[in-house]
Length: 88
Image (cartoon, rainbow, N blue to C red; front, side, top):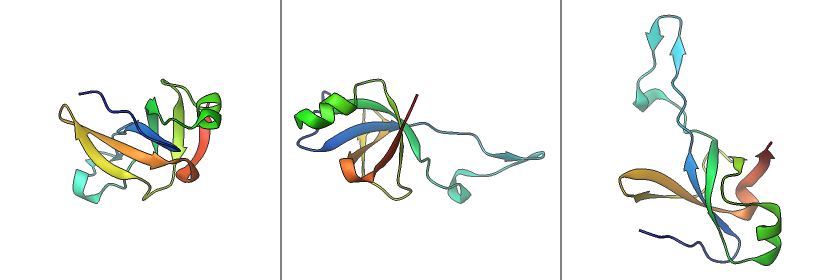
């Protein structure tokens, strides 16, 4: 399935990070949502396309975006205003 976000939105695949404290593994239900992800698609806004490109890594707000599943994987559609930084 090919998803193209519109306007100032970005499709992001969250980067899952394993949480381990000492020898205890924290279950998924107790983990915080990831706040970093890879850009999969950039919306149609020309200025946004100059700033972000497919493959960029971004940091976004903790409760940002709407979750969707594409081919069984979790993705987020995030507004430009919820993206906090681009990681180089």
